[in-house]
Image (cartoon, rainbow, N blue to C red):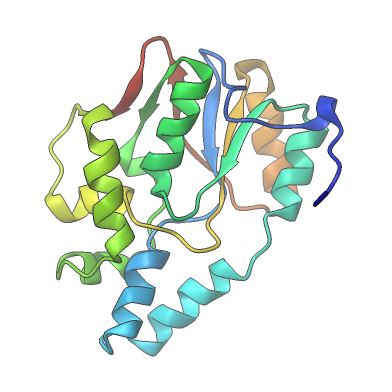
Length: 195
């Protein structure tokens, strides 16, 4: 079954990251935590509405911008979490990632549920499977770590932008009012550093 046709020169892959690239995320984390709280009957309506408003946003504009900028490295963040999908990128590209915790967007109200250890089962699986490749260079509470492993539904894109395109990339995202967070860098080495 053919699901679609891709132009190879316009394709982003997990293997397209280069040392020195800047890493950008297009949606916040926390969807899994909030939707799990909803299933357990403990989520506030406004928190669910906020999460859903992000989940229904398409990644189309960000992906079209990535193709226009001729980016080569990227993936979507779904059930394997930010860390899980980032780890796949580091392995495929044979590089390391440095992620800045304070720059990673997390829905503010997801913290209240995370502190109560409300996470989807997939988040626990992600932690068990991927944490061995994570190096924490700063102190984080367990609930903060878990949010990095939060299984997302309809998450954003994690994009690898060459350093020489970074300034124009940020300007274009701002002018298009496209959510875009600079969350880290591609580094020499392996695995993921959290700083």
